[in-house]
Length: 183
Image (cartoon, rainbow, N blue to C red; front, side):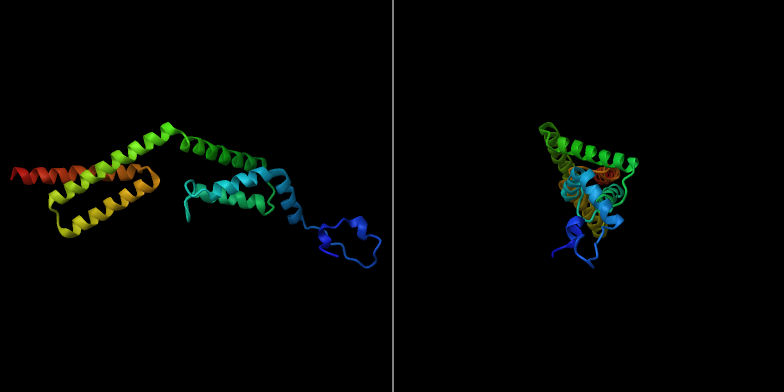
């Protein structure tokens, strides 16, 4: 007979002793969400699959929020107007991100920033070697500089804290090198 849930009730109404499986409220809500928010669900799938936008294993609050809203859509939660508005904002923010990523001017500026920043990190590394700190301090500093360099290559940006740390390291190393020269 196949799956009774998807067969029409009038066809089996003339058969005696047949239990009609009615969809539960959750199943009804899932179907309703698919019908009402099908396009939005596909958009969320695209957002969640984009590893440049949401890195694998990310625990950032915004990314977990996106995942929670997606789960609400596919698992049959009732979508309130506030949730629908938040979903729209998520998609708009992602589309702005895509426009920016595909903009040649933005790409050129980003590459220029990366090259310029890598050159500056290289300069700080050279200063560190010339400053002749203890091997332990030199290794820890080099580890930090390498990690910042990898972050920059991967993400194309530096946080404010990273920039401040690099700036303070540069000043400290330069001061030590200049102090050593004047002795």
